[in-house]
Image (cartoon, rainbow, N blue to C red; front, side, top):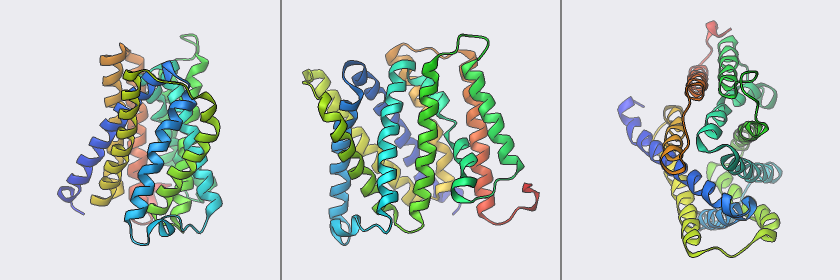
Length: 296
């Protein structure tokens, strides 16, 4: 595909990152007033309804949407993503949108580091160097030895690890199941799991918060729809780097709505992490086209 033909997908990806950043802001606000498990449970109910509607509309209906050859793997993926969302929303409450997203931005580097032991992929010295530089950027954000290290900083780092592992399991699932099947299992398994743990923390919401909860559900469905359209319209390798716009939009919401600040070390560290992540994505794209003798 030419750069021009990738433009519609890129626009969809940027729109998706804006919607997801808005969703993160809504999640932070609601999780400050209500239990995280309860908020994520309601969010997953709408997500599950969304994937069921998509399944009904596709050829073969729900039977085809649920037709996986690896149910154990699909269940593990769904549970892992649900847990990761809970962890990340907790990070928003403790750290705010900017710092949580700046640390979470290292997840592509974790994917690259784990792709060898999990998928058997070979990473050359350039990608390992990018991984090392990226995690140096995380240290710039955390500033160990200069400021008192906040244990809360480990929360988005754990979320990044979980999301990276989820991404690798999704790649494994893609070897046997189409994306529509994986998407269906992601929504339904997560909804069941969150209902089991979240129903115990259910409580009435105020009228304003109920409206914000409805907006959170709608943005979740809209964001996933935009993401699906992005990958439908363009090559994944072309649109994936633009996912980093979520950090930019989240920082904007954090400063404009929640009064967060963007310090120089945080901005510098985030730039290092994003730069290393973009280089890693580029090396992955180059490697997928064929062997590169200079990789090692």
